[in-house]
Length: 228
Image (cartoon, rainbow, N blue to C red):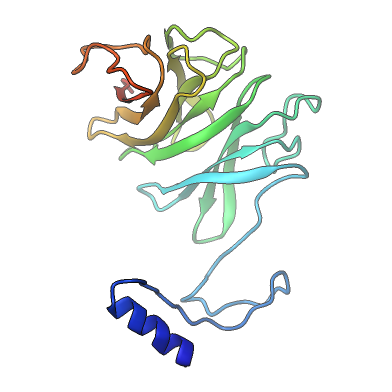
């Protein structure tokens, strides 16, 4: 209690703000169930190598979408095409929050590596995942914009069908710098994905720009809207 009073005093002084949630004691991995109001569901999700979730979103029907990267050839529901390449691919997983079951899993990637920077869902239940790729064979069903050649690091944005069964399209774009990065993605009322981030590229692709030239210095921010 003395420690709690000390933290309260520090918070009142504007030095520390602490939120504490008391929960039943549970040992990791012992199968003990928490009271439902606190944690109705938790699960592992992955294969036999390196996996990590990078973004999560809720669809209009309440389905949970998870965008992750995996190096596992046996990721549940989406095996890798080749067990030789262990670079990371993107996986998009749909989970039913009521039955706690995986509804679908779909994999996206090529011979290089992919990463996830964000995930957004539109009103129709389409999912948009964005990130970076270095795959020369990244599967494109949309277009490719900018000076980024195949094999170098570029951005991708892909649209996943509402039932998670496939990709409606995937775009790749970017400038010549491998250090460019996406900070996040959202969807307009019309269903167009919008991404924003940081670029070091003086040749970043521009369309009807507010600022028509690289501002100088180390890097600039960027905003890109794509047609759904």
